[in-house]
Image (cartoon, rainbow over all chains, first blue to last red; front, top):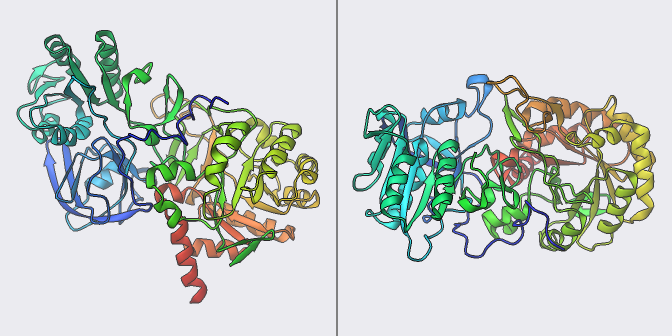
Length: 278
Length: 287
């Protein structure tokens, strides 16, 4: 019998998926560093009990070991999903912006305090198709999972980054070489959308393979452009999650095969599996 | 060691149906999950006769110490479950409870008969209370409807039948009594409480399914009272759940009359919550 759409990949995981297994419990990592990066913060923690080799594009469920809750609207309650930005000699780092009760509490963490985490979870970026040159395209906080991808692929891999303003664009410092930057207000780099930069770059190099992460509207523009130019693209999507390991069925996104749980089959999906990234 | 409906369990901590997908979790955690399995019996996600995609997103909303979900029972359907999921669930190191939901008594009968004949299955739980699907609420909210459902399936399997009670009933203890009289071997409660959240930007419903079910510590006091009153109304074992996040909470539910407890939303925060609750409960009992 043909498995129903949307739940087809539950018990037949592709063997080659870029996934490092997570320990089956929440653990506490010690925060080692909190760095201000313009509008963002980079939080680094020593994850001694976790694997040293999470795959770029994988994510962790984060909460604080102390005082998780009791913030605005008596929240947060559930952990928050974050792709990791970088892992370097056992130190795991995350890029965050305080936009709600969960991120606000995480942003208060100080060195020596506990960061609770479950992960790495999900499947990360797959290698580019044979003969294609990787091209990283990031928007805002979504630049995070491209940092570790560039660490893995090499500093010569070009990155196109879009931000709201110069304050947000300080996250570009996480990338090697000099990434191309566009801002909404022109306060740094070009006043343009990152997809404008992408179109120009793909005109120059139609043999690229795109790795993109950013807000839904940006990802949808990337998806549509890559579909138009027949350029392969992988998109790291975001969806509200309660658990991160397939238990709650809350994070589904619509694909051409029906709903898939983003925490299990993503967060990185091939763009051609989506009719829309919105 | 605990005995539930004649089935021996290594301890009293189960999972609530639909709050842990052991097959998905094995994909994320590997076989370490089996070596450190969080529960003493595993309750499957609810299966239906036909495959279901579930409700459109968004499906989740965080509340003060809780969660509203509107998932809509996505599952492979009976045949897909029997062929693909059940063999893998049979590899779990603990007894398996399969949760089923029928949109009619005939459907329920087919589900119970087909699931009950499989060796991997230790017990069957009847989901008559899922608030996300209209008919589920109807069956479990009414004692006579519940009794008719249990009477219909009771002769079809020799395996223990658990009735999952809904808290969205006028008198859950009355429904529990009706289930017991009709031949149920145990009752479990509570399922989620019906709830709603509005989109802060539009003031329209946030959830794709419009309404959802509330769970987590926010519902614990309500769950404890219902477990207390149902335990006094029936002689069959009660599996108590609703916001349990620690050994102390589990001990409260056991003291209120539950024979076993189940962990639900807390597993979302920590996949090992079941093991932690068991360990904390052990310390409390010894103390």
